[in-house]
Figure 1: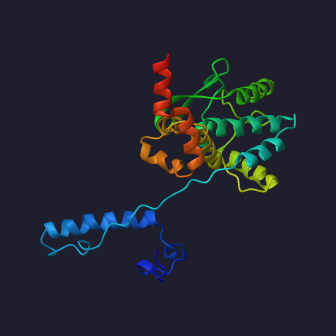
Figure 2: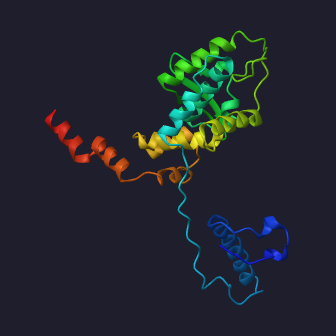
Figure 3: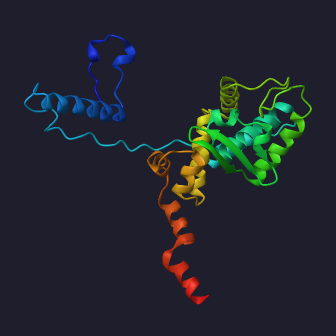
Length: 252
């Protein structure tokens, strides 16, 4: 990271912040292309980067809520009024399915299959199907029952008590307020991180997590794997030991 002042010749505060490892790597790649082109065009005899090693990838660990923090938030959403019922359903959906905020708000009533416990999600990678668990299904059923009594004449799944469709800004405010009550910094994307991390800790594979998150490649998903440790690997091996499982098949 650079600590120099007036980077790029600018005195704007935002231009003089520390550079992240990701930004350094991106700048290196851009300069390498520029200098290589300059050499091929005869503008330079050699690239200034020829003797400079590429910057290494930063080890990025995705932040997530602990199970205790998730429990604290759910306890704050145990009231039987409309807002608590709706907010609890949204909270559980975001953690249980790890969908994006935009995907959450694009859901319609018709997107929900309570019988199969499946959501039809439209996201950056197109349409995909994600499952939600029993506790989430119960909470979602309660919300749908109370939502049916509203005056709203639209099919959007999430709305306020007057039937108006919720916005991203509105949902973000809901969870930040919940976080203040729970004594944590909370926002919708953190719930997505939490869902993906808990999915892996509970034995889900990175490939399944990639589909769950709607990522184009496993490269985007690997950051979630950085939060796993020996205990997670140990428990996963108990379930998936190649020899133990082979021995079961042989004896069968």
